[in-house]
Length: 339
Image 1 (cartoon, rainbow, N blue to C red):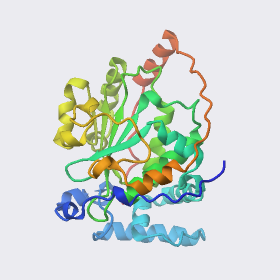
Image 2 (cartoon, rainbow, N blue to C red):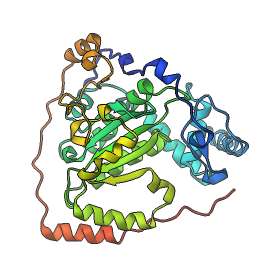
Image 3 (cartoon, rainbow, N blue to C red):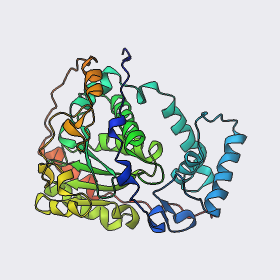
């Protein structure tokens, strides 16, 4: 696939600095809990504790032992994120690092290729507004997810490219380092629920965008998904479940505890019109949502022709098998800490 040569300037996505200056995080938001149970949301311009530094040292010993050359732009926060992704355990560091470096080595994860742009134009994933702490809100429309239309590789490439834009231009080190994620399930039943695609997105985010998720809303669930979710949440880790909230349409007002109504589309209980143009990313705080520069640049780009294959509808038997599979799910607890 031919790479695009157009330079896209997303500076218009940056938040108002005057508003950013008003953000003050308490210590428990920056980092809570201790040692291998630690959870961190702010990674830049903040001190690391003694345990974190010790584990960062252990990580670097493994890097040296295995003669791994880290990228020139590698930072201390990158090291700490790898430590967290490895659950503070030496045995996990090498695998996590190799996975991350392999991801960094793929150019299409960072470039506006034809296929990446075609993906983003569909509205499968897009941004709209910010929460009350200026964290960007990312929306994913699960009804549009289709691995027969776009391959697994394209999902990884396009999501990586898009999340990278949001992290670079919507975040502010030490102030805004997390996003809120809205997954609109469109009441999809288990047979049509895109579990594999969600797994791809989750895996991409966990290692390569470690620590970015502040809150996940799962909206408009089907009865079968709600039932399965109740069983999963009963045994899942409490800290993980704290980040996730499943809401039916009559409960959408709860989203406004975090996101003001004017920062939400009408379909999610807000007062802003539903978005119909998904690329480039919109900044609803500036007139028109875009700069003239970005619109001209996007207009000059070509998109790929995508062949859409029809999806074969699942049978009732398939639905029952999937529900049975979900009902047997068990969330395994982490291995014992090796403090």
